[in-house]
Image (cartoon, rainbow, N blue to C red):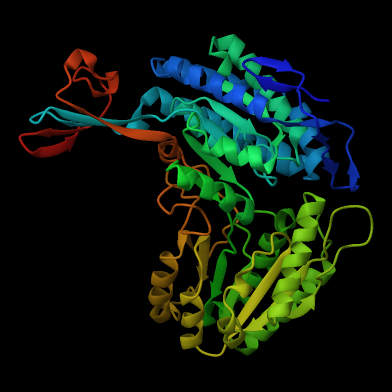
Length: 520
């Protein structure tokens, strides 16, 4: 059985049960056995993380940054081994996806986190000199990160965005590996261990558990030694854990579900319908549709152009090879979601069933529903079909289209495609105003599939896209604030203030002098 990583040591687990990941390209179980940790191991990991946090509270930002830089360099040097492991466990292509896109993004995130830790800008120091009141964000405490199945590098519990943000803001991390890629996560733990030893960081900075029982997982989330949770995964499991965190008032930053609506305006359809069709199919089938920002809901007005669009997408979905899904559970979930949409009244245009053979795959699926039918059961028609499936809503009028938009749940993204000649300008703004309240990121004439690692990026949105609409999981330094607490220092002597709040500190801060606020 594979070893767990607690307190700087890879050691045998006391677990009585284990699990194996599968190769989705073949459908066969892989040979490694991974432990399902019992409470004794979770309890120890929490104790170690608590002790580590006490040490980190007085640690220099430079030391934290050096660890992140070193870890990033080790990941880069281990690229081939990581790509091989992730390919075997997820079926995602080695190139360009894993080796040329996702791994460089992961390294870049860690480097950006290191730079933010050094600069201290994320702490947002604010100084009222007249009242002698000062405040800044500080580390919150041990963080547990639950990684998703669809990004084995960039969102990994021991290397991805949540991990980078939590460490950079001064918190130790307990990583809960995703069951789809435990060996990949273990390799990250081995590299983190090397980085810890090279940089002299506390042993409890990074710890790894592969799986727990539902009962023990909920107990861990509710434990007072854990300060916050970063979670990316299914809505049902996330809501169950969130309910535990909510009961004890603990921050639970969850990415849960999103269908990412796309609205095609009439002028755009007349102007470049064929191009929009190709653009959509490329985005909708990218990675077998297994992106949190996959455009799974298309909304348009009834017209001859719309009829041609629907027929064209259907033909292209039929003729394009179905991609490999991440696991058998993703496969079964996709088939179930399609059946829910069909039972609600959606017309199945193509696909809908498992592809024959051993690999995890479902035929590319397109469904259609009228706007009126959508409005009869908007909840059912917003069932997330995670994978290579799309629901197309065709509305009779602009009034009906707006009614559909009003019924949308919270999403990560939405996009509006409009004519370049200005013919859609009169109807654009009301639609944009409605969608802007429903999403974390609004796009124009661009598919939402790519999520740039930019300080201006918001990878978040209203429920159920995430658990809180005010935070992002991508975009440093903003993502770091999730794992921080705002601390105010009132009449504290200068020598006792955090360095970032001292007058001699060169870091830019919001300062009030005689009631006038400036950033200097």
